[in-house]
Amino acid sequence: MKQLFLISILSIFTMGGIHAQGNFEASAEVGFVIGDASDFTSMSLGAALAYLFEVNDDFQVGPEVGYTNYFGKDYTSGSITIKGDDLGVIPILVKAKYSLSDQFKAEGGAGYAVFTGDGDGGEFTWRLGGSYEFTEDWGVGAGYNSITGDGGSIDTFYVRVTRSW
Image 1: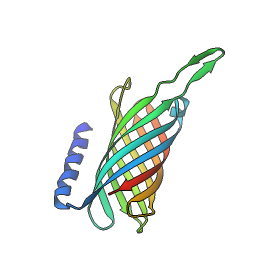
Image 2: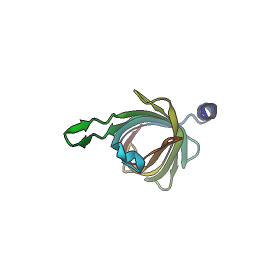
Image 3: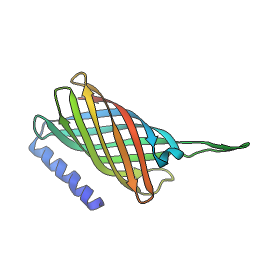
Image 4: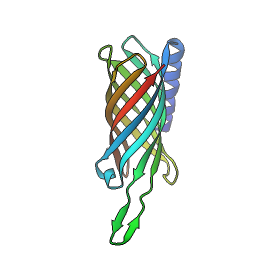
C-alpha cells in the first residue's frame, strides 16, 4: 500500500512537469465525528495545504498534506473523571477537484493518515465533498472524511474554508 501511494505521488509530480499551471490551496476545517469513534471524540480541527495541477479547464489533481486534531472526550463515573486523550493525524492525500460550474466544485481524495503522539502507525484515508468558490481566491466546502483500518474507522462530516492563490 505504501509503495502504491508513493508511485501515485511521483506520478502526480510528473504530470505537473507537463502542465506547469497550478495553484496552492490552504484550508481550515472543523469536523463532527460520527459512528463508533464518537464514543471517544466528538469533533476535530484541522488545516491543510495542497498544490493542484491543472489537467484541463475543469479538472485539477495534486498532493495535499495537513494536520487534524481529534479532541478526546472525558468520562465521569461518580466522583471519578477519566480524561480522554486527543489524537493527532497527518493526512497525506492525492486530491482531485472537478468544476461543475464556475463556482461549484466536486472534490475527493485518498491517501494515508499518519497518527502522531501515542497513536502508532497509520491507516488508509479518503474524503468526498463539494465546495462553493464565492471569489477566485476564497471558497467554502463540506464533505465526509473516513480513516479506515483493521480496528474500525474514524468518520467525520466537515466544513471547510479555503484560500487559493
